[in-house]
Image (cartoon, rainbow, N blue to C red; front, side, top):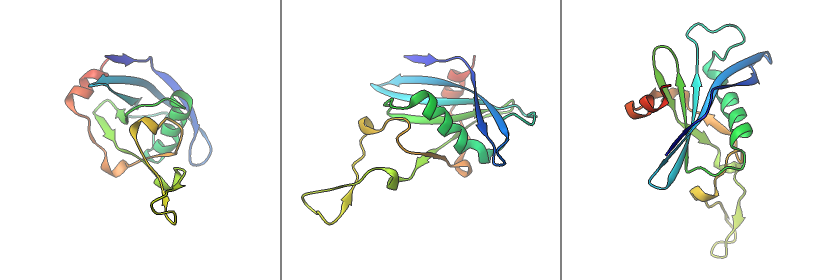
Length: 148
């Protein structure tokens, strides 16, 4: 099962606090009882000043979208695909494990422990970071799925 939402705008501040706009939609893909959320961002090759244009703005855009659309929603994985006229690039998303609340265990009470299971991870719980250096062309099946 696949759900493809309509494209909409996310307004966010640039590094110099000026207004920027990113066109995006959410795609939910269910395979083998796992649900993946794809943040599909469209980018113009020659953006106007107000349009999403810089890779430095990815973190802000992704977190704005997740906090608006997926806060409290459990998904098994999350992907970011940025489409331009020339290509579709998938960027890995990462987070800081130190942002997850730690707890003490009975086995080693002097150590803080954090347990991560996919069922415990929900949108908006921690800030996400986009690894722009690790961006790779999206897989063919995903590119085809994202086509209108």
